[in-house]
Structures are given as structure tokens and as C-alpha cells.
Image (cartoon, rainbow, N blue to C red; front, side, top):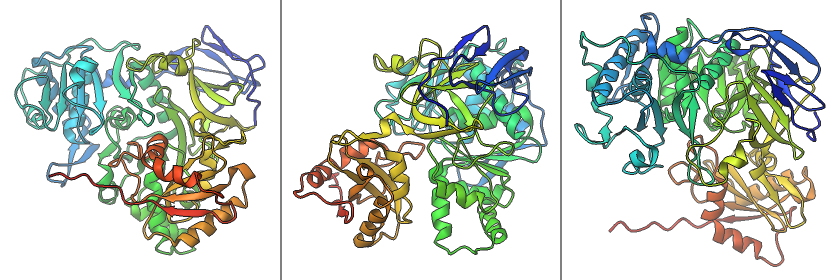
Length: 582
């Protein structure tokens, strides 16, 4: 483990110099990739010097300026009737051109912002590709989290497309109209609407998950998108024979990366939604699945409940069948994956590769076939640098930064995230091992300080508690309190309270005294995006959970005498009161 109490690295003239610091650039391979065909010297873990050149494919301008003629590879999706449909990539691109012509007729020009507030669909993809054709900017908004009437004004949108918009006029338009535009072929469709993006131009606006308040808006540069796509392609080589399944919201920019990749590198891509992802997988047989840990956790729990055979070959067959039988690897990130999930898939011969990144940095590290260490998030990519401050907080630098600030945020927020050096203070705590693999232990916000002054890293305790098959989600509570309480969301069927208490007691026996959980509050409903207790990436919202059960938590901590770690108290919260609709 490297020393986190180090001084900052300095970067001058594209050269990273390491003077008694923890800096890692390009630890992934002996021939580390450097952007823009510039010869660069990089310091690897303060010891090795690597010189390399590589040219990045300008994927964004490939989509913007060149017509796709690929009739071999396909885009699979669900139609409005729920049935699976398919287009060649050439057909997809041609329809995006038709949509671009209609947007242009409505006045959309280069650098204009076009918003999309809708679930995944072919129309969503076509709008995004059409916006790129015009040299404009896509702003993806998660349904249910934004007021459509305010968005055009708040974010300077030329147009906003929603499911409830107007078919014919106004700034808020119906996304349903896009289906008709897509089929409106015209002989006078221009080949180009602009001369291409510059690397510093803005391609998209993305938003933080908003788990701690109003989402912050970040404008994303073209160079950062090209750089990230290049690094992924370098280590995974997506191409002919591959089919990438994406089902998280298209408003997450990284989900759209794989559509861009298909058009640029020539492979199939399948678009689904979370609720039909597995059914779609079994029918389209992807080779790569892009999912969050919660998605894989659900599969693990369900299959383990079926008493899987001990034989690894048979387990592999069953896991492969879940996804259609052709998976070469599974991708996960956005939240920490538990060791139990990672071992479940990897031990059965279905690789699940965890990675790490933020909206503000894009992909920083990634496990892959050439460099994999279970429990880590992989080696740092060659286009990134990492170091740690004196508190062990990870700081990330990028050759092509996403941006140096939020465009939309509360006063003082930018200064907390973006450093004058151009680096990003991630607020994540971690370390590098001796081989350059990055480990993330949790966020600074995940630290719970009990009344003794001891700092407890909540994710470490929460993962232990989730070791019981009935514990679906878990959030620790106890800042300033004498002991810790866990708020848990249960899977079905729920365990007997006495059994849950015994499980927590067993976990406590392996923990330090201040890490031990004295009480468990069982939530009466599962945490979900619908009830506001999970983010769109299926991560628990700590603040929202604490607020939702503030009364019960207060009552638990007011008990005299308090519960003990060897016999933890289990309290089942009352069902939430439903407001009358009459």
C-alpha cells in the first residue's frame, strides 16, 4: 500500500514528474497509450519511465461528419409495442440524418442545447445522434427528477423532448414525433450541417446522481469522450462478433458510449430497459453486458436460492444462460460491487470486471482480461494520473479533462471538487497496491464518526451485513451517537428477527468495538428509485434513508439502557402512511 501522505505531483509540458509523490499514469501496460500522437514521458508509480505514441480515433467527429455504411452489424431495441426490433447500423445512421434535418428546420444549430427527458427508446438514440450531426449539445435528464416546464429556461435549451410534449410547437416537444421524422427520407438531406467539433467543444451535459441534493450539471468536452472511448477500445477490443447490451438510462452519457462505439468500431449493440434487460439478453445474446452491482446482486441472490450445482462447469452454463449464452465479460461500476458478487461470477468462469470513475473524471481504472485483481477496480488507465492527499482521499488528473468546473451548482461546490491544478478531488478513500491496482474503500461522506471520536468507514461494515441473503440494502447510521444502527431493506422472504439479530452479532464478533452494530431498523419497504431511497444507479441515498426513518432512529438511540453488540436490537419500522388521493 502506498503512502497517502504525499505532496502534489506537478505536470508541465505534458510530462508528469514525480518528486516524492504517489502518481500513477499508464500503469496498465508496458506500452502505455498517450493521446493525440504526442510522444510523452510518464512516470509509473514513481519508478518506471515509459515512452509511447498512439493516435486516438476521433469517434465524435466520425459520427458527426461521416455516414455509416455498415450493413453487417445491427442495433437491437424494443419497439413501442414491446417487441424486439433491429436495424443495421447504416439504417440507424440514415434515420439519425433524417431527424437531424427536422431539428435543423426547427432552428437547431451548432452548440445549441437539446434536452431529452424520456426513458430509453430508439427515438432517444436517434435524437442524440442527430444532435451530434448538427454539432450541438445533448442534455440528458432522468425522468421523474426534473420539472420539464423549467428545464428550457434553467439550462438554456433550444428544445426539450419529453413523452408529454407538444407535437407541433413550443420549446417542449413530444419525443413521439421523432419516429415519424426518422422515416421521412428526402433526397436533399445534406451530408454535413457543420465543420466538426473542436476537442474543447461541449458534446453533452450530464448530471450527478443527486444523492446529496439537487443534481449538479457538468458540460462534457469532446476530447474527454474520445479519450475514454479510446482507452476502453484498447483494453477490450470490441468489434465484429460482439454485441454490447446497455439498459441503464440513456441520460447517463457513458451508456451512450457503447452506441457510439458500435458505429465507429463495427459491432452490434442492444438497447433495453432495466425491467426487460434479462429477457432482452436471452433473446439477443450479448457478448458484453453493462450493468451496476445491484443488477448482478439480484441475479446472484435468485440463482443461489435455486441451490446451484457445485460443479463449476455447470454453474457457468447456468450463468451464461441468464444472458443468452455468449457472454465474454460483464462490466460493472458506478457503485462498489461486493466481494460475494464478484466471486460468484468470476469463480464460475463468467468474468465480472469492476472499474472506477466519476461523472467528473469519466473512467479512471478498469479491470480487464490483461490485468485483473478481484477486489480492486483495476489499474489506472494511461490517460489518467492518481495521487492521494494526507487524508487518503484520491485525486485524479486527466490528459483530457471532462471539464474544470460544474456549469450548474451551488456556490462553493466547484472549489470542493475541482483543484487549481486541473485535478478532481474525488472524495473517495482508497489505496494502490504494489502492482498498481487501485482499491476504493468508500467516500469521505461514508465515514460515520461515533461519539467516541472513532471514524467508521460505513461500506466495510455494510458489506459484512449484506452477507445475509435476506439483507438486500443496508445504510449505517450513528454520527455523534454512542453506537451504530443499520437501516436495512430486506429481500423476500424476510428473516426471523431473532435470526437477523444473530447474524449481526456474528458480524460484530469480527469487527472492532466502535464498528459494531447495536441495532437494526428494518425498513417496511424495499429501497427503490420510486420511493426516492436509491439513485438511478441503484445506490442507497444515505441522507434520504436517514431522513425517512429519523423518528425511529431517534427512538432507538434514546433507549436506556441501549442495545448491545452481542444481542443487537431488531426493530421493524411501521408502514409509511399513504396520503389520501380523494
